Image (cartoon, rainbow, N blue to C red):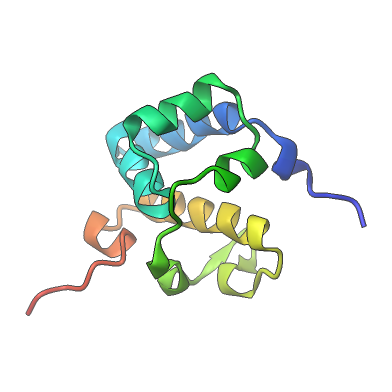
Length: 120
C-alpha cells in the first residue's frame, strides 16, 4: 500500500493555508497557533522551528511535545471522513488538526474548539 502524500508534505507549506482560511473568516493567526499548541504541545518557538526546518507532517507530529489527551473528544467529518473512524494514527492526527481549523473558520468559540468544559 502506498503512503499518503500528505505525510511527506511540508507542514510549512500547509500552515499558511490554515492561517488564510482562518483570516478569511475574521479569525486570527494567534487562534490558529493556539489550536496547534493545544493539539500538539508546541509552544510558539517550537512551532516556528518546525516551520523553519520545513519538516513534513510525519516529523511534525513525531516531534510534537505531547498530543492532547482530549483528542478523543474531537469528532465529526472532514472531507466526508469521520475523524474518529480514521485508522492510521498519523492521518488521524492530521484530520484532527483539519477539523479544529474548520471549526475555527466556521466561527465556533475557542472554548468549544479546545474542548473545554463549560461552566454553569
